[in-house]
Image 1 (cartoon, rainbow, N blue to C red):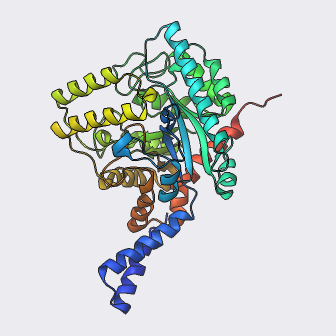
Image 2: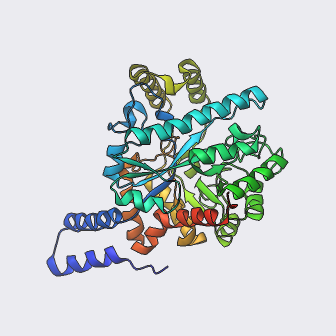
Image 3: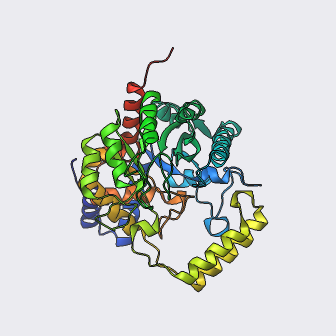
Length: 410
């Protein structure tokens, strides 16, 4: 990587020769950054937005307000922030590990996958479904937003790893293993060790993902799982939304040795913006109890009417006001991103903010803010070529590797 503080140098020369004010200099720098950002293919590898697709009255073409309904991604704000698309997650919360519960999780995940495809079909003039790495550029060239599909938490597949072929046929191209709790596939980073990495079923899952051409995602899984994924997978592994343990020591974050091992194996870490993973946010028991009571009262949030959601947001905001917690800032996010770039290099880092899944920090609140990341990276001295890799080149390389290594069909 060639680190040339291009924007800073240009702005300094302009200031020296024209005597422009600092505000004009800032405006020029921002405009230059925005122009470069708009020229890139920008993909976020972890969008939890499909959780909104089943909400009564919610439409991705409408501009929403995170403060009013919690929504952070929609078409107008994607355009405003210069986000071309990304990986729309089929997320399933971990439930009981029984055959009946697993089947229910399978059905819910399949329905969520269908909802993603229905959204694309309904708004085919604005969105395009990507099934191969090369589809992304084609769709973006048509002026549409790119929709890849991913799985967060393999719980719906715990009963039968061959179900992954059904999700692949639906469009899934990246799949994680665990979430907040252990499952029958793997240990979670935020649970006590059970399998000490992958279970025997989890190792079968790795082989099946490789056979199909699905990229394996180690985010939320334990350190042992990441080690074993790197060792067992025939193609490079991704962390779709993770942070750096050296910046903040949290179980969800990854230490430098593993970031280097991931990079050495060809893999990629996509840095998230989940506040409590970026900085220390001490727990407040009263707040947690109030929030738990609220969540128990409202039930399934994706079934709320807009009026019910407004009432829910009002109660949640009241809890935030009564027991405020420190929220990470854009600079805290950049600290993790810059550290990952320093340790792994520009060929092995990307962006996975975790919007609509709890992500978002002060200054990086919703999809309208994506371009700020490019501005910050350019100010750090990274080049346009570097940004092309960070924003999409690296993850698309992994997809191409999985496509090339998949088992032949027919």
